[in-house]
Each structure stands twice: as C-alpha cells, then as structure tokens.
Length: 409
Image (tube, rainbow, N blue to C red; front, side, top):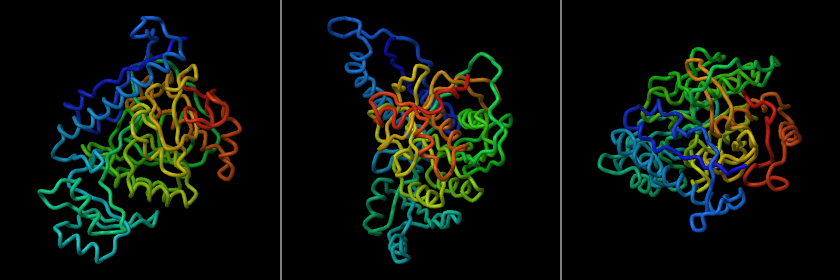
C-alpha cells in the first residue's frame, strides 16, 4: 500500500463561472497511487514515514491554495464580495447583528449605518438586523466600529460558505436502490437538486434559486439511495455570486425546521458566524440534529464551520481502504467518519458521477441518522461505528466509521 497525495487544483475556473456554478470547488482529481520518495536520501518511504515527512507539507500546500482561492475570488468579484476582519469572504458592505438594543441601532444609524433588512426567523424565534455599512469604509473597519457602538451585541459579516466535495464524470452503471423504510424527515442546506432527483419540497434563499447544482444533486441522490423517504432542500446558492451566505443559511435552517426536518445536512464550510451559530443552537433546542462536513482544505486550514459549532455532528471522509482523506479538513471536535471517496452518485442531469469529499460522507451519516431512534441515536451510532486508528475516539476518525457497508457503487 502506498500513501496517496491528492493535488488540489487552483480554482482558475473562478475567472469564468458564476459562484453558483462553483459549488464543487476545489475540484480534487480522483487519486492515483503515488510512490513517495525521501527528498534527501531518495529512499522509498513506507506509509508511516510518508505520513511523518509528507503529510505536513501537503497540509501546508492545501492551506496555501485555500488562501489563494479566497484572494482570487475576492478580486474577481470585487463588486459583491469582500474579506472580513478575519480574512474570510463575505457579501460586500453588509453586517449582520443579533441581540442589539434599539438605542444601539440608533447609534449605528447616526454613525452612517443603514438598516437594510430587519426581521425574525420565526421558526427559530431569532430576530436579526442586516446593516448596510457607510460608503468608503471597509468591511473589516466597519466590524470594529460597530462593535464599539454595540457592546454586547453579536456582530458578524454575511460570510460565504462553500461546498466540500467534487463531482467527476464516471462510466454508466445501474445504481442499487435504497431501503423503502420510513425515515425521519431530512433537510438539506446546499445548492438545488436537478429535476431528476426527487425531493418532497424545495425552496430558494438566494437570487435565482432554486437552481440545479451538481453538488446539491449528489447530496440528495445519496440520501435517496440510502432510502430516506422525506427530503426537503433549501437552496442557498441559486445563481447568486454571493450565494451560500450566512443570512441565507440561517433562514434556510429556520424553514427546514418549520417544515418538520429532524435531521439537517449542511455539507458546506465557512468561518465562525454568530448568526449561523445562533440558528443552529435554536434548532438544536427543538430537537433537530445538524450534521456537517469538515471540508477539504486540509488539516492546516482553520476549523471548519458549521462542523465546529457545539453539538453539531461533525463528519470526515475515508477512501475504499478506510484511510482518512489526506485533504480532509478539521473541526474543533470530530464525531464520525464515513465513505468520502471511491463512491458514486448523480449530478443535476441524473448522470452517474464519481464523488470525492467530506460533503458526501456527511450525507451518508445524515441518512443513517434518519433511521435511528431520535431519543437514542448517539448510542445506536456509537454501537455500530467501526473503530479506526487509535483505540477509541480520536482526532482523525472520531468515534469510528459509519456506513462501511452502504458505500454507493
């Protein structure tokens, strides 16, 4: 067995495609066996030595490419995307506020901020205010200014989130049908599915939504393939260049909760965001289980969100030999691993595609949760999880591997 390095493509296609069409970025090629040589002695390294000497360098390279993609995205969409105080991409000129008093909002208005939208996500009892920042002030500076004007309020940029998996064409093959058992209703926050992918209901939360995407279609297909009987999709991308933003995700979660979803899959990755965090905690208080992928930017990337929020079921991916994906990101906690490579699904046109990424591992765990006892799902999943890596829960595989036998072929 040879250790695999997975080259990540620099997202040059950002130059020509709208953001809504980039849900599968970064596009990760199907891995091929690679012989790893020591750069000094030239000796062939075994798996352990390759991990020790090569994985760190690959992690740093993936992180470098992540930063380059963010910078490129901001430069090429300068009219609508800007970097926040933490260097994360967000909708330009907008800040989101929760828990602000009326007098604080008046101070902000006097300072030049304008209320762009004020509302409540009723299903989560979550009021919010979207403020438009004064012209001539960067998003990062506006965040700091608003924090001074509103001590105690939760302020964040309208951060963008990106899908954490790639969809690659594959030879045609008849797919195996899933179980027909009745499942707990599952919600999906993602791009829209194609018309060939049946769902109970779909609603758009972005300009041009619902709009079919390969990533969203693959997630829905995996859920259907596993036998889930009630799937609803909230499309947070549509054709919007700033799709996948925090406000859209929070509204999407609220709608899915209101429609009865008890498990919500979010195979997206972004920075920590106060509004999304509150939406998730409010949904959890209603008994909803949120499942999220750790992303594909490598272990040197910042902790992935929503996967890192408290109580979220955080999922990583493994290949057909149950080895952790080298490009898998990290979270502040890790719950489970599931197949995330050497698996197949369907794109927006219903065509069979090869899938790779933690996005798809997350969908498989969501499907498994849909058939678990809502009051005892943790003990049930722990009982069937296959321990990998170090004995017991660990930072690479979490509490173990789920869906080892349900790998879509």
